[in-house]
Amino acid sequence: MVFASFRRYLSMRSQSSKVQTLYDHCKSIFSLSGKPSPPSSQALLKLSSILDTVQPTDVGLRVETADDDRGHGFFGVNQLNRVARWAQPITYVDIHECDSFTMCMFCFPTSSVIPLHDHPGMTVFSKLLYGSLHVKAYDWVEPPCIIESKEPGYPQVRLAKLAVDKVLNAPCETSVLYPKQGGNLHCFTAVTPCAVLDVLAPPYREDEGRKCTYYHDYPYSTFSGKGSIGDGEEDEYAWLAEIETPGDLYMRSGVYAGPAIKV
Image (cartoon, rainbow, N blue to C red):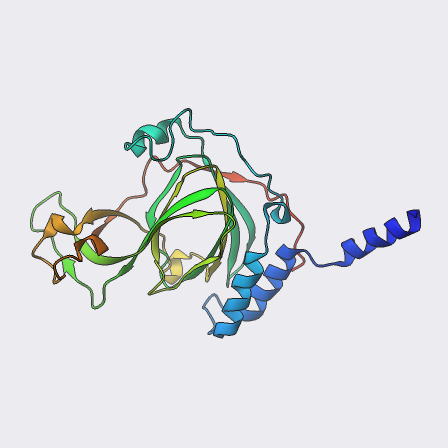
């Protein structure tokens, strides 16, 4: 009996962890130069399939279930800035980073927000590990439709099309955004305590033109008459203006507690 248990223990030790499997596949399909290789659709589908199997315990997380919003539900208060003052910080956990890809996690308290931001030239896989998360995402309209402000204090705006506006509830399939489609500019708002496992390829790198830029979205009607959108489609579009990194973006670093990765 003891011997059988020991053999099972050895078998478990010899099995590759899910996070190791994820790392190995990322390493095999993304180049080491910091620029994305052209992975096949099958390779990308396999990456999504691997992420689909990952559970919180596979990456060292404990599922948070307590309501931490001090009585403010996600849809109970319209003034998110008021909620943000009471929210605890979002925790960023670095799992692995190299020139070709990043593996990381974001752990959200209820009502916390990562504001609208972009992923220039990047492909991002996001797996909701637990909880509920509202995602609002856009893609740029091509060719670019830009309005240059002629008045001081008013920003330049660019037209974008709404790609995603929904609440994700774990368990759910992995979401993927691409450089020009799938919602490359997105905003996350935690409906409940939740966590997201991300794979970004290639990673942010400002010296290579991949800077994270934040935006404010204005309803299409704000600059009505400036675009060429047909009647009845206005809700599917917005004008985006670049802004400084929001001062109320409250984030701290956490320590990865999952299985070690052999690189």
